[in-house]
Length: 280
Image (cartoon, rainbow, N blue to C red; front, side, top):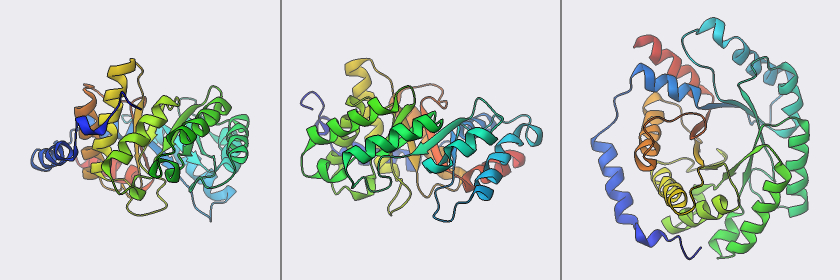
C-alpha cells in the first residue's frame, strides 16, 4: 500500500471537486442518457424475490429492443446467486451479463471458506460477473493484508467471471479508508470497485465516487491496469446518474464511458432515464 496514499490528494481536493460539480453540472444529452442506460445493472435483491418476479425482470430486458429500438440495452441483470441459473435460462439477449452477488453479501461477515464456495457456485451456475463485499472491519482496523488475501481467494474462485468489489462506503468514517479499500480491491484483481450494497444508508454518495475514482486513476497510472467504477444504492433520478457519469469521466480522463468502465446498480432509474429520453 506504501506506493498509494490518499494524503497526496487530501480531503480538500475532494471538497473542491464536489464544489466544482455542484457549480458546473453536466447537461444531459440524448447520447449521455443512452450511455447511462447501457451502463445499468438492472437489479433485484429483495427478500421477497421469486421465480415469477425475476422472470418478469428478465422479460423486460428481452423485450427492450422491440419497445426502444434506438436505446441500447442494459449492461447486466443482478440477482442473488440462487436465481442465476433462472436468469441464464430465461435471458435471450447475449450481450446482457448475468450478475450475481456472493461472498457473504451484504455484510461479508462469515467464514472465508463459505465466501469462496459461494463465489464458485455462482460462477458454476452461469454468472458472468460476481459482486462481493470487502471486509470493512479489516480495512478500518488496518488489517489490509487479510482483506487482500480474502479478496484474492474470491477472485481466483470467480475464474473467468468479472469480480466487482463492494466497499460499502457508508461504513467508513475517513476518506482515507475508502481510498485504501479501493486500492486493496484493485490489487486483489477487482475488475470494478463498487460503492455500496444498497442495504444500508448512506449508500452511494458523490464524495465516495470522487475518492474511488482518484484511486482508480492512481492505480492505472502506477500499474497500467484498467478497472471500472460501479455506483449503487439510492440512485433513482437521471440527474443523480449524470452526476456520477460526470465524476467518473472527469477524474479517470476517459472521453467516453461504457459498460466496461462505468456501472450503475439500479432498477427505478432505468424507467426514469427512458422517460427523460422520450422528453428529449
